[in-house]
Image (cartoon, rainbow, N blue to C red; front, side, top):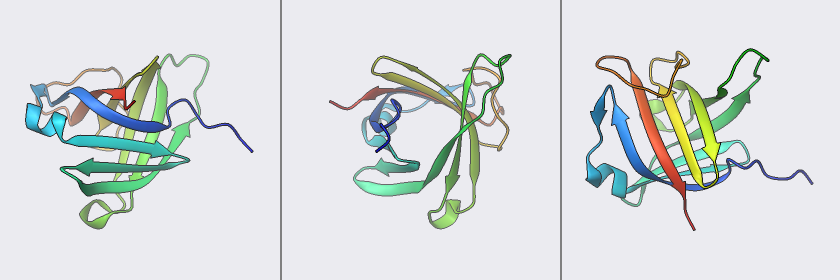
Length: 124
């Protein structure tokens, strides 16, 4: 049986920003992300907001960032692909999602960048 990947678990946002604007505390405090064996689920206020599959993207020796692709299978988002980069340090996970399907080049957002940057902590 294969060991689980360190990214797997339930993650709670501690901060987030979309296109350079900080997410409201209400959103941060009521959201959770679950990653488990290639599947993801986003719950907001106790209801499933999105779910789908994720896969790791092969990294070349020249690339310093780890890449992840999420593909939604849920309702209005079905078929939507989020090309993302991630960093895992201890119990902190940082993901920068490319909402336009393009892989972000940095852990940063700016006005009209179509980037969503979230720092999560692992749920105890």
